[in-house]
Image (tube, rainbow, N blue to C red; front, top):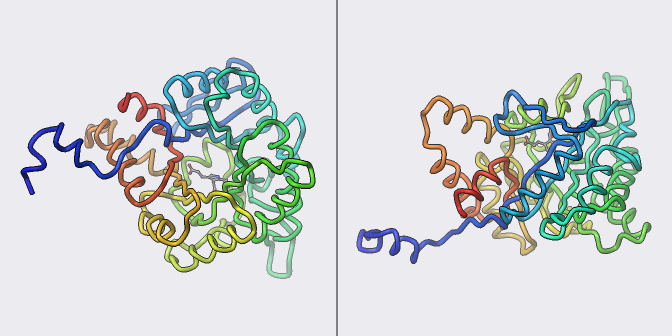
Amino acid sequence: MRRLRRSEAMRALVRETSVEPGDLIYPLFICPGEGVRRAIGSMPGVFNLSVDEAVREAEEAAQLGLGGLLLFGLPEAKDEQGTGAWDESGIVQQALRALKNSAASKKLVLIADVCLCEYTSHGHCGKVIETADGWTVDNDPSLALLARTAASLAKAGADVVAPSDMMDGRVAAIRLALDKDGLNDTPILSYASKFASAFYGPFREAADSAPQFGDRKTYQMDGANLREAMREIDLDLEEGADMILMKPAMPYLDVILAARERVDVPIGAYQVSGEYSMLQAAFEKGWLDRDRATLESLTSIRRAGADFIVTYFAKDAAKLLG
Ligand code: PBG
């Protein structure tokens, strides 16, 4: 076996998996204001960015040859319903309009995350109601709010809408709403298999979206379940999803592989905040080689079968690859 490992040229020739900058999607957290670039404590190198700063990031992302951006919003104010999510002048809607006006947008796919948790005062991803046993996230009334949000984001300029809420039936509801508004050409990237994961911890600081009570286990999936993930994927595709997103990535590589073997639609994987933060922590301690570990983590996700990767390392990786 060692004959084919003798030089870098030889290794490059027989390498089975590649990572290209164009495979990488860079998440941005948009906040109100101007000239704002607020560091996120648990995610070194990641910032809350005002719209003008986001446009600058987009220019850099385009220059580096990244595949696209995934946009999240931190609204000025939150309320019970999450009205900021579908507000015509909402924070992500503003960012989308500004980005669409920039030259960078021609080279990038602008993906808008569709969820309510950043916009609701309770921090849950749907409508919360009181029940005899306390509270619950009410599935069907949440669909109308998510569909409205998706249509509003597509109208503001999103090339792709990506629902991450995990309500049942949201893909069908969103497809219907998009088509009704003449947005037939907007694809849906559904977070088809999204597990209730501890690895989202740092994101909730970045997006200020931690649930104020309870957890997300009644709507996000149990991390122990692979077959259930396949059912989620089948349902989302039946409802009209054009692509699927698997999340988290590194602790769930087997789920990505199983999805790859099952379906032929494009598959993305989200290397989530906790995956990024734990690597960053090890880099800071000098326990891992930054450049090698960054690329190895992305290669493993591609090898498992992901066509593209949402990752906070997108810019760093593109620089290493360039
Ligand atoms: C919103 C959403 C979350 C993430 C993406 N979209 C948080 C959550 O579900 O609690 C997590 C992304 C990350 O950790 O990087 N529903």
